[in-house]
Image 1 (spheres, one colour):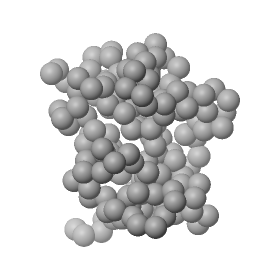
Image 2 (cartoon, helix red, strand yellow):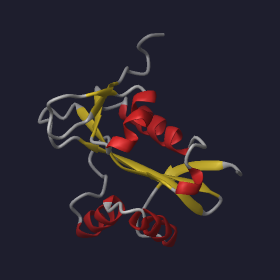
Image 3 (tube, one colour):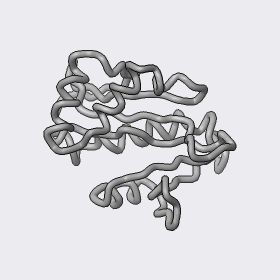
Image 4 (cartoon, one colour):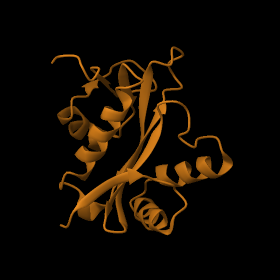
Length: 153
């Protein structure tokens, strides 16, 4: 595998379409929804603290994930990990870890915690990255408390 780079992502580029097609072939619709919401303006990852990242190998998009203000928590102090997807050929090569750590690092400036709702197959992945299972909540399967950049040093 060659060098990977992390950069902001716009979900209308041709490289996004390739990754979206791979996700659809696996039966995942989140990248289609992301693109629909981007195009209709309902979620452009533009609120304070939000971001959408892509992981690239050269010019090829091999993974992506985003951060939104969590709409299920009215206090605004919670971020929500959204639309994480890694090309099947690049799984277990650190792409997902790179994405989640970049999202968490970005989130620390604005949010006290991250929430997400993950499919069963992804639970072990998120738990290995410090997310704790959440029981009894409709809109979250996992949560990770964030420390501010100067805490713990």
